[in-house]
Length: 221
Image (tube, rainbow, N blue to C red; front, side, top):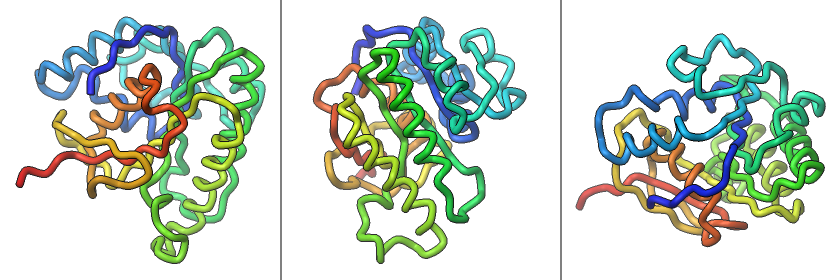
């Protein structure tokens, strides 16, 4: 799954989910693959658009240029995108499952800012529920899933080199073997560290561009 990353710097746009995915760097054991990612992470110039920068652990701050703001504010997004080569999007609503357009409006702003700055590649974390028929999505997630669908629709119409990553349940497990499939979900869970790694790797892997990517940890037979 390792890809050579030859585009830098990189933008990460998000808040709570961003922190959940990326804070494993430097914290999770001594797995060789993780150490390679730690090294790669430290070599990139990363900008992060965060609502609450105080949540970012101290050990990450030297590697990240923080922009405090909101993805629904086009000025904040434009400031964050400027000068970058690629985008990773990990937007979330925390624990709020009520009807929303915050995610899709944020996605529209990101797409507009990318086009203005000539940025082509974006990987976006959505949800495996998008592989379900709408009536099969658990009712409590239906409103959030609808906004994820709007995000995906904007991506498909953007003309960008996008990667839509639709993960299942996220775990705190260490790095493991995982499978990526196009158009379907290969399993029921994925380690946060592996999801984060794939979001980065996929940007420089043309085979993943303009694909709906399911991802899951391999389960030993």
